[in-house]
Length: 283
Ligand SMILES: CCC/C=C/C(=O)SCCNC(=O)CCNC(=O)[C@H](O)C(C)(C)COP(=O)([O-])OP(=O)([O-])OC[C@H]1O[C@@H](n2cnc3c(N)ncnc32)[C@H](O)[C@@H]1OP(=O)([O-])[O-]
Ligand SMILES: NC(=O)C1=CN([C@@H]2O[C@H](COP(=O)(O)OP(=O)(O)OC[C@H]3O[C@@H](n4cnc5c(N)ncnc54)[C@H](OP(=O)(O)O)[C@@H]3O)[C@@H](O)[C@H]2O)C=CC1
Image (cartoon, rainbow, N blue to C red; front, side, top):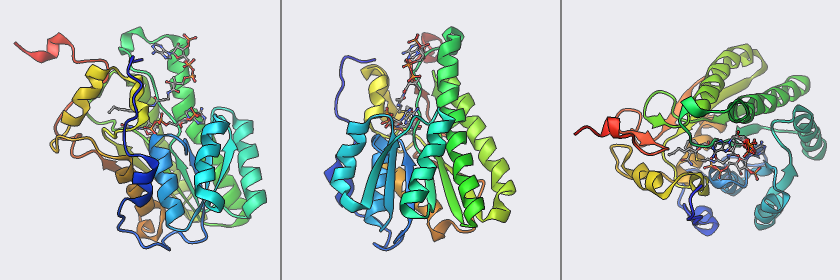
C-alpha cells in the first residue's frame, strides 16, 4: 500500500455530466445489479446506467459507501450489502431485488481486485482470497442471476469486468488466473444459456484511473499511463460506455465475447504492478 492515498479518476460530478453517445432512454425502466457499484469503475457504470433510465442496485460490503452513492441517485438506485464470496448472501440479494422490483435485466460484475505481489511469494491464503473473490464470487452472482431469469422466463445480460489476460500485466498472476477463469466460464455459459435468452460478455479494462489504484505504489502508478500506445490512462467512463454497449440492445447479437478497452495495451506496452525488474530494463 502506498503512503499517498489520493483521489484519482473522475469525480462523481464529472462522471454524471460526461457527454455520452447513448440516448437518455437507452435503459429505460430496466433494473441493473452492479457489484462493486460504489467502487471506481462500478460507480461510473451505476451513474451512467441511471442516467440512461435504469434503476441500479448497488452491491458491495460497505453500507455507508453504497448509501452515499444511492442518496445521490435518489429513486434511480438502491443499496444492498453483500459479500459476493458468500453464496447465501448472493441468493438473498437476488431474492430481495426480485421481490422489490419484480425484474432484473442486467448484471454487471465489477466487484473484484487483487494485491500486487510476485507470484513466487503468494501465500495460500492470498491466492485463495483472490480466486474466491474474482472467480468464485463472480460465478455465484452469474448463477444466481441466471437461475432467476430461467425461472421467470425473463431475458438477461451479464457483463463481467475482468482484466487483460493476454499480455502486459505483471505482478497479479492470481488475478490473471481468476479472470481467465471468468472469461472461459463466460464463453461456456454463453452457449448453455443462449436458449434462455441470456447473454454473457466480459469487458477487459486496461489502465483505468480509479481509487482502486491506491493498492499500488506511486512508482508503479506513474508508469500506467505509458503502458499503451495512446500513452495515457483510460477513464471509468470508457468502461461504463462499453458496458452499456454490451448490456443494451446494441449488444443483442453479441455473447461470449470479451471487449478489451485498453488503448491498445494488449498489443504494445507493459504494466508492472510491482515495479519493473532490472532484468527487463536491458542495459
Ligand atoms: C493498471 C493496473 C491494473 C489494475 C488493476 C485493478 O484491478 S485496480 C483495482 C484494484 N482494486 C482492488 O484491488 C481493491 C480490492 N482488493 C481487495 O479487496 C484485496 O486485495 C483482496 C482481493 C485480496 C481481498 O482481500 P480480503 O478482503 O480477502 O482480505 P485481506 O485483505 O485480509 O487479504 C487476505 C489475504 O490475502 C493476502 N494479502 C492481501 N494483501 C496482501 C499484500 N499486499 N501482500 C501480500 N499478501 C497479501 C494475505 O495472505 C491476506 O491474509 P493475511 O496475511 O492478511 O491474513
Ligand atoms: N482500475 C483499473 O485500472 C482496472 C480495474 N479492473 C477491475 O475492474 C473492477 C473494478 O475496479 P475498480 O473500480 O478500479 O476498483 P475498486 O477497488 O475501486 O472497486 C472494487 C469494488 O469491489 C468491491 N468488492 C471487492 N470485494 C468484494 C466482495 N467480496 N463483495 C462485494 N464487493 C466487493 C469493493 O467494495 P467494498 O470494498 O466496499 O466491498 C469495491 O467497491 C475490479 O474487478 C478490478 O480488478 C481491471 C483492470 C484495470
